[in-house]
Length: 382
Ligand SMILES: [Zn+2]
Image (cartoon, rainbow, N blue to C red):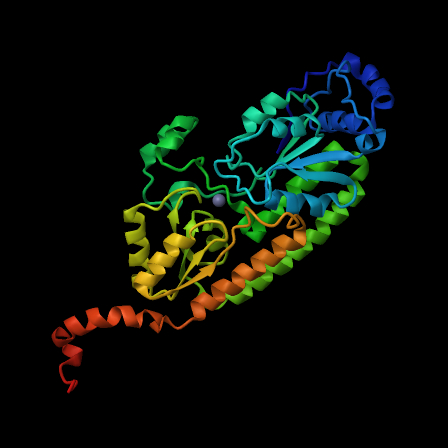
């Protein structure tokens, strides 16, 4: 779930030194050390120098770096006023295929805690952490213990051998044309799994800052209550559409779909990918087979492809926001709740929309085959 990167093992005989260190070092460093002890990983080397800061005051506040928006929204919910939370990626840049900048390593160098989604969503992170060379860093992998779906569970284009090959081999990932790991990383889009992520973040912050336990616990409890309410609302709203299919642009919705008894199909693996003609054909066939009246694009990708498909089929385009990007101020937990409620509303509206939107397109085809339809033989057309 969380670990101290690069921590040196602390011998029992050094514990007395460590006790002295608690007084000698700034609070945040001591807390990170204590977190390491709580995790059974040994303490930091007492000779590790505390990071310099021009102003001592912020140095005493826990510095938490998050990777992308949902991680920031969850972490700010738990941290409240007790920690300074800074997001690594610009909020308008998604995590898929993100290229790290030198300033990212610098931010991690200066941080006490790093919160990531995990499940190989942040492929840039390992190198960046290495470059940051911060032995005191506590890393919270929010996906720890969260039930996962493999990419092949819902992607027929991936074969077993692809994934055998892909395991532990980054080059094999690139062969797919979209870069993801063995498991789909979009767990935050299922509020039930989001609760587990929040619990992981809570536990990690407590490990890094044990004195903040009451605050982190209370904050997490309040947000988890919000997530439970959200989950109950979505469950109720989508219950009438159990077993139905919706179509999104990139492969972000399997957890959401599973959680609410829906099926999902997507056009591409990651937002940066161009849809293949085969994928477009498959989506169009799904739309026809399921009688869908609406397909769901996303705010930063897919509009062009979906507009084209919708025009061809005479259907509507709505939006399902995976929340990977957003406005600069969309960093609070309320923003997550708002996005998920809007997604659900859009989905319900899409399911409820009459599917005769397709009729202008289907009419010419229908007319050509009509004479052969036994059902229509008795219908007078003139
Ligand atoms: Zn994604």
